[in-house]
Length: 279
Length: 224
Image (cartoon, rainbow over all chains, first blue to last red; front, side, top):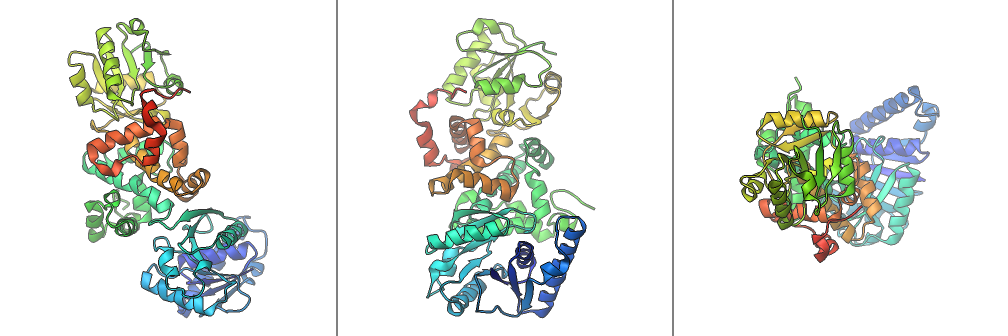
């Protein structure tokens, strides 16, 4: 199977790495040659680490032989095109308009979007919108087992069957979800953060108590520790996206603290301070 | 320290949760067996359903001279429960869903540090922390809206096992939302969301599917 991955950032490189590990051929594309090279080095380094730790059995050269870099994808002998471009609606719509024109009906097209409605990408594909869906991989791709398979308004049953088969071949668990804002995982997770913020604001409990209670019930990290790890700015961005796409459903209204912390530059671990201090 | 405790108002599973790891005997108490609780140092009252039922139980416990009630306070504030029995026993709030979840850090509502100390000695494997008297406390307020969100996906045709698998794998939660609901029972999910909705507004309104599940049979607690 040959997979074209569009975009060589963290997610694109992760998807490419997983695919070549699982024996698939990948063409990783990016218009920026420096970005392609960075992705190549990242993949190589990660594979080398996997070999040294005994997680990967084949020689590095075998894996790398399945990876090609290009500024744009080939159009012949391609089974899947997975788009992993920056999370911008206009950019992704342009990409899918182009992909729909370039690739024949038998090529499946997927967006690795975490927040953009697949139906809005299909709307720009005049020819075969039914062969478009979402494949939402989670970061870090090599370690996270889940892939949300997103069914847009026009996505066909054949697409879903093929997407299930692809995720299985990539060693992942695919779950078919509707094209709702936030899809399944990001939607279901919103109250975990927002209610934690509200209850801390109301003085019900401190950040540490909320985190300790949830961790004591088996959650790997409490909500404030997760926000600090993922980035308060990233968490706010996802929340805003769901809030706006649901036409301001109050369930998803961001908490004022999020905007204030982002403005102040206290984004969590990556800035040394979030809800907790890390200096 | 108390040398025994009774439990009433919840399921057999909840009783077992309180018996597990307890340094004192914990026995179940039924609604027709009040005399046995006369003068008891501690009774755990786990009702989360209709408040009228909980009021009756608390008044009975007050009548038979129970000293302290560890009472579920996620659907009725401790301040409100004190109004029901102004001259009754001392009341300490707790989160029944957190207890069912086996949480090692249990939230309680009390201004008396001695009561926290006593609970820590009665259940030495658990840490008890005092939080503000609030509907849902911490855990119920977190987990119930997560379940409510998940039900919307179920109603839209996503298989329950896919919802749970997706949430476990995508978020590393220890259980999927529908597994949590199965553990708590849909009546507890419903009554918890209703109380949260009443206190905090429509963002907690129970999904129509949940309402349909519990229906008029809600006056009966589910039995294990």
